[in-house]
Image (cartoon, rainbow, N blue to C red; front, side, top):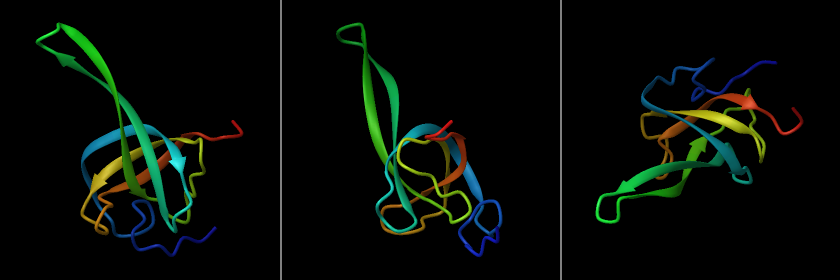
Length: 98
């Protein structure tokens, strides 16, 4: 399969740097965009308890990767691609059918 996407971290010229997160794709309806939800914990000093939180991160979904809803993926920080996207999906760790 040929990948002609310039914004692909594997076949294109897009460089990644900074943070790398794992998460689940909760939406892939937008063109070349996937919403990745990641879960993390934060400690509340006042109550001495841990709090579980989720964040939804819009990420670029290259043509060669094509992550679907339900896939467990790795996303990496990159330059700003659009108004909301500054992450790109680098690989699918576990697909829907796997």
